[in-house]
Image 1 (cartoon, rainbow, N blue to C red):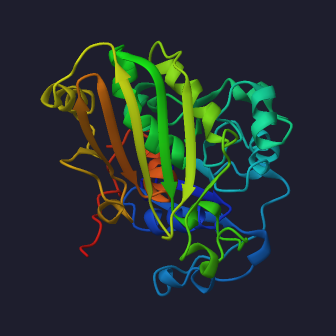
Image 2 (cartoon, rainbow, N blue to C red; image 1 turned 180 degrees about the vertical axis):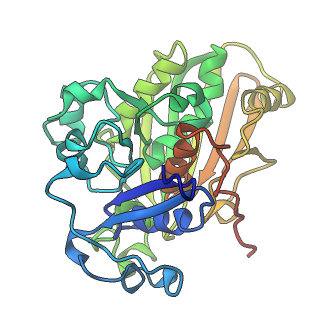
Image 3 (tube, helix red, strand yellow; image 1 turned 30 degrees about the horizontal axis):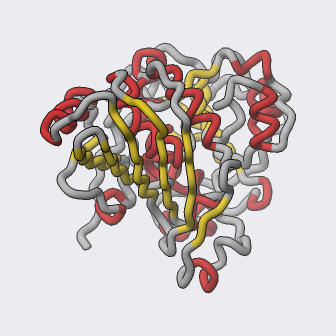
Length: 347
């Protein structure tokens, strides 16, 4: 920490993508943080605001290439990694031990190296460090996060799904199959253009992808087992929405007892009591009301033993950079809402 300013000294590795852009947007105005390093090998030397036009006039930062010798970064308090899957694996082990880490990729989310290889098509090369990573689903894991040095920030689909399911799993009332139908905007595929994110293809289309093979499936199942006694059959299906931002998840559940709607709402409100960023709403969430915010809106409905839970988040904020900053706040003893209280727009 910079003792002259009292601010947390921050490095962002991978600042040119959407996740890096959102980290910059949030942290530039965080009252307790100072960005001192932001890397983007392909844009080294360029002004940050030349790449992220929304930041024009707001920062004099320039991108640099990632340093070859990571051991020299002793003046950094926390490093955010917003790199493609597989890259943090080779860089984080070489950081000074004094530097805390929040990794936004999937590199340290899955405990089993073989499962990681199956879903990410990569060999895990830092298994000795895996046990030191804490899963960063803030609302359900606060105390461990406060004392953590390394955080594996959850995936965007995982965040929306786990926040929707955690209260029911914790209750012990779930029985039968759990089905999650989740939809995401195109920014979830990253800033690099691809066939499935090309505007003419995406904006007039709707389709499913990665049936039974999405990389967030083992992450979700692993953490549900940590929340409670979860051994249910789990079906998870992802779809492409013709929008740029937002995730909407519809979760279909069965319970061992009949739950009146007011009892179900009470269960969720009690579980998230004190969680500023989880809002229990009437009817249905709407991704328009959570876009550009760190909120997760949840609605619950019951009919006898049948339950449906809806959740909506901004995939780049609550599903990535916002939750990462929320975790940083806890790691440094700050109120978790610091620098993150901003609303969506209407309309």
